[in-house]
Image 1 (cartoon, helix red, strand yellow):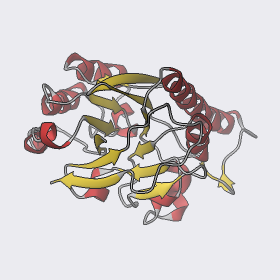
Image 2 (image 1 turned 45 degrees about the vertical axis):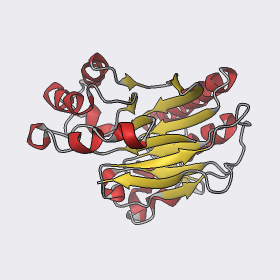
Image 3 (image 1 turned 180 degrees about the horizontal axis):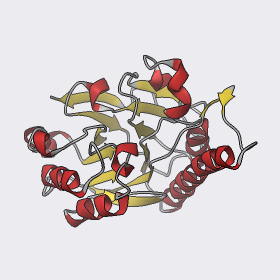
Image 4 (image 1 turned 90 degrees about the vertical axis):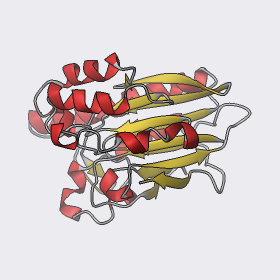
Length: 262
């Protein structure tokens, strides 16, 4: 089993410095890697990014992250990424990374993603230029996610994970006002996951949503926004396949069972 710790929407600032470090220091005992699902800062400033960096620097497990909409607020997303990467965090946007976990190749593909809505209630590439660009941006994020997952499949990763900030399915938005679903995620992200295949999809963003969901192709989805988890992180246990996962294969029963640390 591969033990995947994950959390998003920690929204750190100087006032919250040190709040998560005691829990993160326990990761070596309960997890093999840590995924951060975006909205790591409150306003996307370099000062806030440094707080996050201190929180995760030198942890006993590798850390992989995507940024969220809050991390873009100050138009300093590149600087925020650089601060995190200086302490060893792998920040993904439209690309993947391969980790060695006890001899097992674990692949993580990541993108922030974007909105647009879900089947039957979604925006389209029609009409005004700004509307077309809205959906095309989401499609570019989804295309990058699919390409990264395919690369991980070709790299013979025994476990593959899709990491986003925005939600790929509406299941994990249950509890949020339906009127804002189009701003919380897009079906295009789920299409990418199902097309290229993954063992687990992890996202944040929906603070009032639900933890559990599934794509139409049978890939399990987990909303790891910290307000949903109610703790510092959750740990999901994924089986190791003897060969790469099929393009849209279902995860065996019992996979992605969650535990957590407060």
